[in-house]
Length: 224
Image (cartoon, rainbow, N blue to C red; front, side, top):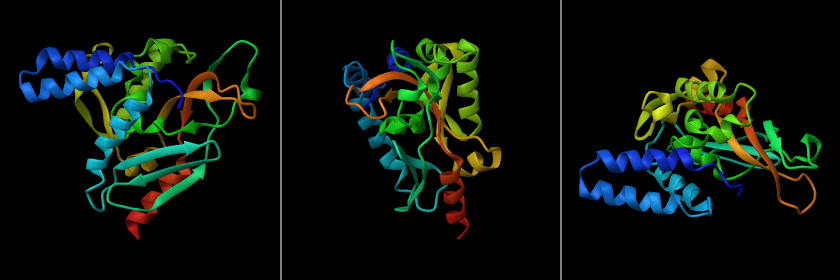
């Protein structure tokens, strides 16, 4: 899994620790801060998946609870459904590459960390990430626009993950497949870029837009 920018999540959790008084909540947030601080980003994705599993218990909902890609195929799943809706994996845009590498060497979007965007982290928290801003031509202003765009396709804002650089609002939470299709706007995923063929591993990082086709298929399934 490519290493994700964890600073916005750490700041948001620390803010929660300062403002929450319930011992149980503080203990949980403290554990999450400890987990997020570990160098392996897989821990964070696992915690995000655990949160999404709760939403999967709601039958017939339009909330996206799974989003992943393997370099050739992109898949999503809705709450309360076992059906996976597929489309081709997109290219990674607005990317920064390591020396001696460029777009021609990069594989299409790959990895299981896109679950972060569904729980208010990753691209949803771009407004609080100078690292993501470094990928984007518009810098921090464009990073804030990414978070605003995610807000337009989500059902609420997080009560835990607050962004000081976004007027202390909570990060967008709960991607609604109906809004995605209505606005023709898909989640933006901050991701690492792997080499298309060799075993050198990660060669850069950037932002990839989820393909609209799998979201359209999911909406059609709700109407069936």
